[in-house]
Amino acid sequence: MNSTKQRVVVGLSGGVDSSVAALLLKEQGYEVVGLFMKNWEDEVDTQCRAREDLIDAVAVADILDIEIESVNFSAEYRERVFQNFLSEYQAGRTPNPDILCNSEIKFKAFLDHAMTLGADFIATGHYARLRHGPAGVQLLRGLDPGKDQSYFLYRLNQQQLARTLFPVGALQKSAVRALARQAGLPTATKKDSTGICFIGERPFRQFLQRYLPITPGLMQTPTGQVMGTHQGLMYYTLGQRQGLGIGGPGEPWFVAAKDLQHNLLTVVQGHDHPALYSQSVQVEQLSWIAGAPPAPERRFGAKNRYRQSDAPCTLESSSPQHLKLRFDHPQWAVTPGQSAVIYQGEVCLGGGIIAASE
View 1 (cartoon, rainbow, N blue to C red):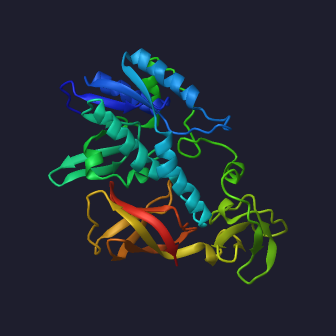
View 2: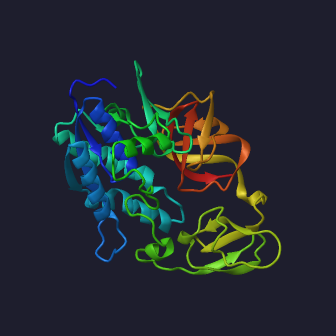
View 3: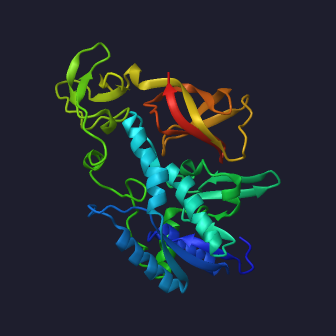
């Protein structure tokens, strides 16, 4: 990275990745400013770690001798991310709020605010890389295969990526922690955050019940045999095994389908039951990093969920609003509401929201 005292506003989350991102940029000669985002407020919420994370972010900024500001984007988060999160669950789908959080908060609200601070760039601790060329900016996988986060960034556009730096994208996680230890950063051994983006880890069903009513219904097999009752379709996702309450001999039971109209949850026995597999997927709400879709005759790899290996596929049909992906091999538990993200080698091309599979 070339720097002539350009100003970079780093999203300091209080975690080790963003801490080391700020450290590396400071060492490279950038003028670094930290920005801590508070994106979740709830009067009855006693589990929020925002205060602890802010303390850690301030401690890191103090050690690095950089300015830090705290900004509250909770209204934007609730309007742009959380309302979508609830409406998707209410519609029987399983959303990924981290993806919307990146495109709407971290790389929109945060980016806009950073520009008012005179930033040339923003930076985050994401494990991803960028490649600049005559045709624009390409989003590449992070080099640590276990931490690559390009899947969560596929909705970013050329304008956002042109203003972004990913300082840790070429590092292994172990190297990031080693750098933090060497610099004496208090986040060096801090556990990675998990759970819902900015809301954190909590008993999911109890949390959702605060916003969506319980709607019990029947749990049955594809042939109509009733196996029990469910507490609400929003609490289950395709491929789910735990929490079904179905005992008895034989293989475990899995969620295979959700019928919102009749409030029915379909379950099947055995991980390899045919009802759990799909040969193709319909995708909507498309977003392409280059600004346009790739040529349909080419071969691609696609992830239907984070941490999944790329599934070889072809782009069978496409329009500005929809595309159909056909996989070489049937895919397990393809879930509406999740994202199908398309790759060509190390380059993340974009993707969209899974609408249906067959």
